[in-house]
Image (cartoon, rainbow, N blue to C red; front, side):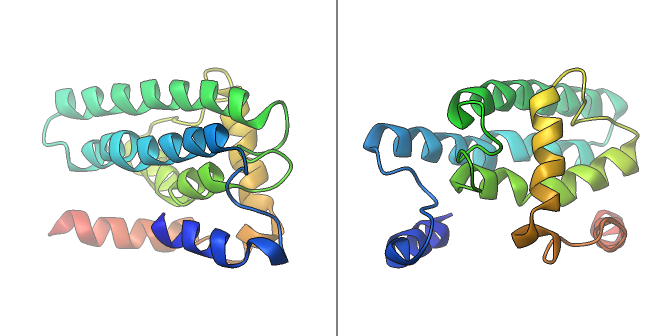
Length: 156
């Protein structure tokens, strides 16, 4: 995410900012991006690497609890708009959106429903909107290719 901040600073004058201008808002967005990387995603890895059903269930529970927190964060940060960054894709959108391919793989490989329209309706709609965005849809890896890669990694 440091590179994303660098891009935001260097090209801020030539386009839409990735981080909010307000220092407090910027700190909130940074906090949630770190949460995604350091707290939430490791629970996703835990699902894939679990050696027992109990460990898998525990990691899945942690991942779902994290998504509920991210749902609340989305509601506050987006202020009722389409993305964490408001009307446009922002810092937290990039942080969480980078893992949406992995979410799809985990859901398919382990029969889980992580982005659930009933439990996290705002995030479920956000994920669809993010993946359909013109800046994302051309670079988002295909789930099938990610699935092949995940199977190869887990076989080692």
